[in-house]
Image (cartoon, rainbow, N blue to C red; front, side, top):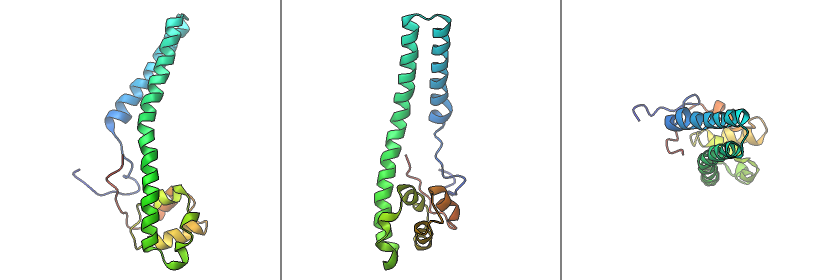
Length: 145
């Protein structure tokens, strides 16, 4: 990567071959198969629609399953980090943070985590986006799936 600066606005990972080629082609394929079936409602064309949908779903799931596994790992890592950086009064409440909040906290540097966790536990920062917006000094994560 030439520029390793990461912010709220740039932290999403875009994979051009996936986002701008594979997904559009797979969606167009479903549409084309459906149009063919409407124009010529034979079993083989209906089967082509089902295969196109299955292909799209299979490829989509092959991307979403690793993201779910990544989120599980992030939750585990963040719980360990919170044990280390939170003050004693907040450590016992780590389990009260939602998965979404833990995932948002991963971008916060250690010195900002106690304040952000306190605000999340207090109900002020409910989602990962709320937490990400509240981070002053972004901690980049370049190892995302």
